Image 1 (cartoon, rainbow, N blue to C red):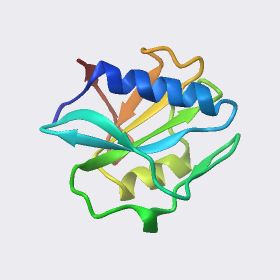
Image 2: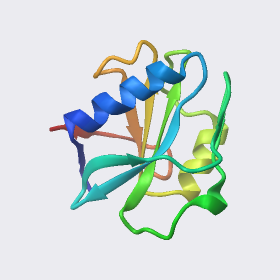
Image 3: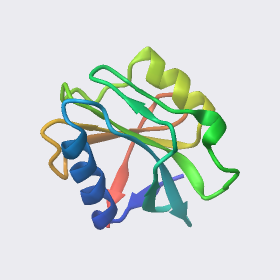
Image 4: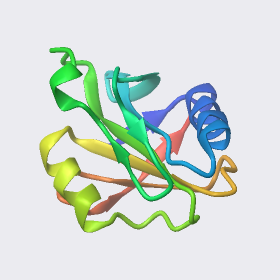
Length: 121
């Protein structure tokens, strides 16, 4: 399955990551017909310099939430073992954005950690 993301949504993600820097930024992705159009901030998410921790019990039952997005202030957009564990539990598509948070500074993965393409609309 192929996913696309609205350019405005990706720009908002990058600005949010810049605002959180040097800490990580984390949110959930909302999509309609495989088009990611919005981010959802989970109450209680804790951001630090090396990780962001979701309070998954705060995640609403909402089938439009299809995955996660978070930043890596290091600029490396390869998932960590902790990221891979999260991916397996929280949706079909996961985006990691990296410093310096330009529109092209991201990678996307499926729930198994396999790199996937996400087209910018």
